[in-house]
Length: 346
Image (cartoon, rainbow, N blue to C red; front, side):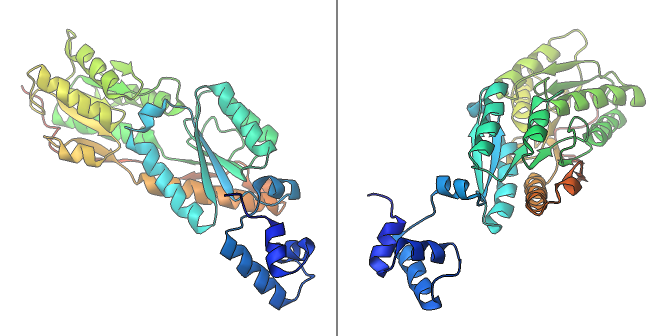
């Protein structure tokens, strides 16, 4: 079936295409009765505005862009992004705006995508995730004057508005808790090393070791998958000075670590304590249930989407300057102790 057009509406309503255009764009030039009849016919035949034509007219795209530079297979197993997106969607749907999500393979593809989205007026703004050190996206978005909000910060964001949480507080709290239980060697299975938040967590982790007088020198970077989490866990547990507690950067790797401990004949938490970053149902259904770092990820996504809608409105109203360098701090993740942490075996 071909897409309904303005000409189809005009023919059925017995009016000119110009009159249909006036009615659909809520402009004067037709009577209220004719306008009502045209709108009813448009709804009946399923007419929708053409996005290219809307772009040429300068109308809003009513869409927000989100590009994720991660392997698609990882997105299918890591709950964080889907929960973040669910929070964004709740805000955007109420505002009548859609989320345009695209997975990209490399930095240049992502930069080209922003240029194309903005040049073709496919989006009104963008939400940026996985901030990197000296991130080229920051400079490009500022240059394009594309309304954008970064999920991350507060450093490395340039003049762009951002939503962030002080994860150093969380890391310090977690290391302090494990130290209070009696652990003296604590390992960390980290995520992608190029991500700014991974570096911030690494720095905070090592600093917390000095604060509490424990060894936090062993950090292994991974790609967030269960396979990599298992590999890193084996490496740590086979070492001469194996840790008695391990902090993982996501729930999938923590569960994989739990399996490796069982495989090696270790009892959790007697022989090894495990802490997972970002609580999830998966952390709660394994045995023992995993101690986790809990935060409201959908609320995080919702706050980012709400801030972006504010930035877009200000840009449309000529108040873009007020939107610059606006940082919104949300609650940092909180430690939720469960059965996977306990004092180490003496």
